Image (tube, rainbow, N blue to C red; front, side, top):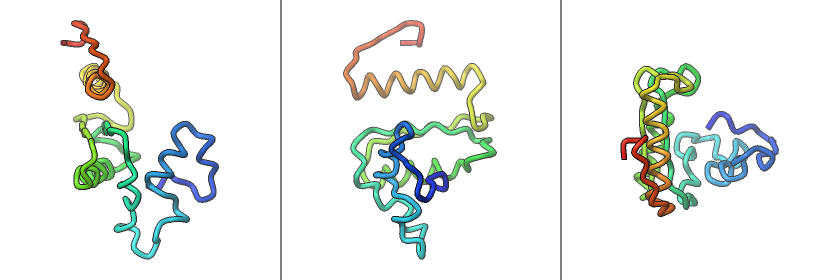
Length: 123
């Protein structure tokens, strides 16, 4: 992932230490064959993933999320991928926001046994 900075103090950013442990850093990857090393730490994943990406994202190529989801599935990890049509690097359409909220709610219900059912969210 290109956003992981060389030598950055990843533990000072929320979730940073976990991402570095899972994906590695520029310093720990085999840079001679970056494509193969890209997900070399994926076997360490122990949490479910919810990946949501706008198909018109001008900052992060949508293929990165598609590829990451495919790699998680290939490794037998729990991953849900949702691609939002006509959304960029943020979600502003009411339908997209509702889908985002419902997806988070479903993830929590599935993995945290919350049993929360709220008719406002179509459940």
